[in-house]
Amino acid sequence: MPPKALGSGFRAANLQMSIALACHALSITAAEAIVASTINGAHALRRAASIGSIEAGKSADLILLGVPDYRELPYHFGVNLVNVVMIRGAVLVERSKVKWPVP
Image 1 (cartoon, rainbow, N blue to C red):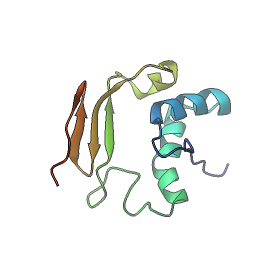
Image 2: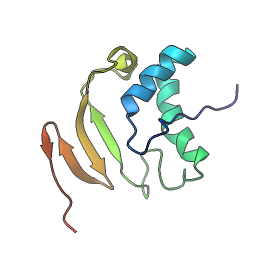
Image 3: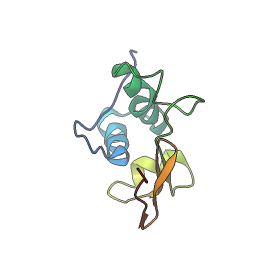
Image 4: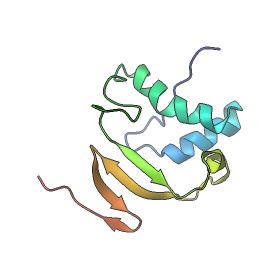
């Protein structure tokens, strides 16, 4: 089976929704949906050398979700599980707090 890449089609993507919809509509596992929306998506954009996985030298754009197991993601459709948002290694959002980057 060829690799899959997921995206929302919008600039401000909702990763949780994309993963949940992919699991239900495409009958793929949560792990497959996460891979499709991270490293496979980066490969589709030809940017896998700088984004898409947690590795030294890559942009640290991350979300930390308040869910005990990644396999639960498809079952929390419509629930905001985001606890932390990091862009380029800087914490921008901590549950109910927004931090603006210093130029």
